[in-house]
Length: 420
Image (cartoon, rainbow, N blue to C red; front, side, top):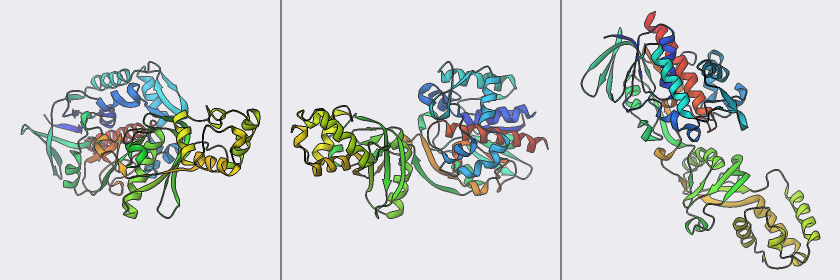
């Protein structure tokens, strides 16, 4: 059977592309090499599925450091508010949490996946799972998708929605890059983003701080000339290999880029444990605490300001004896401790692999994609959406927003192309 549109990849962008194409009258075949559709969706947001983010479009684009500006045209056609309406029309009630993140009221990603699959079936989309694609033959009057079993499927338009190389157990193993190259596309260099950061510092190797979480700190990346590249104020955690948690994930791509740009083995990071207070303000509040309990050991006066192990670690770095009574602490020593609290510096040497990353940086160059339709500028009747494109955001509903927006637009325009 011939199809108007074949969508390859059953992740967030592919599912939305199938809805977009079928809603506009196309006969759609959705192919996925895995057993189940929506596997990445089912584990997103810690299994609760952060379907989008409700911040204004301008803010959302700021949270997509990988070519976010490319999405201005797309957001004028289909945006985060449209995603919210789409799911609410499918009967999924949504709620807003911190930083604009939108979740299903049920807290179950499975509900989102089920609703999407029901919609696709209701629209008459044909689904084939366990069906790996070998290659694509492009022709002027339509294309052929060649399956691994040798079967050829003719179609007027193709949407490639197979993801990047991150989280490979969900099926994202980089298959689509070869098909994009065959159509004449450039693949920009791939690198891990939203990934834990590694360090060879002694305190990391000795697991001194392993498992310690810091709340609402500013974690920053510095270049070899001592200039700040990027800072993120969020939570973080020390691990047995380095640092992780939201702040570290957001900083990770800047670590990767800086190591490459400056061709150095390590890059400096700093932790400001009290980003909302200046050193002077911190000094004056600690002095008040000391005045209140002058005879108490300084480590006990400061207890509760930071996780105990981290506080003692910083005291050691500042050469402050935690057992001396607070009124015996020299002002210079106190200033050194405050400096450590505001500027604890350590070196990192990279990140975990791209397979361990939440998101792939790099991909099909967006310069070769029409921003309002997601159509290839190199090959008639070819469309791209989701993580295969050189587009990436921070965690917090931004990447899934990119997937749904580009998916809807790619599918809709693939139908228009096929039906003329």
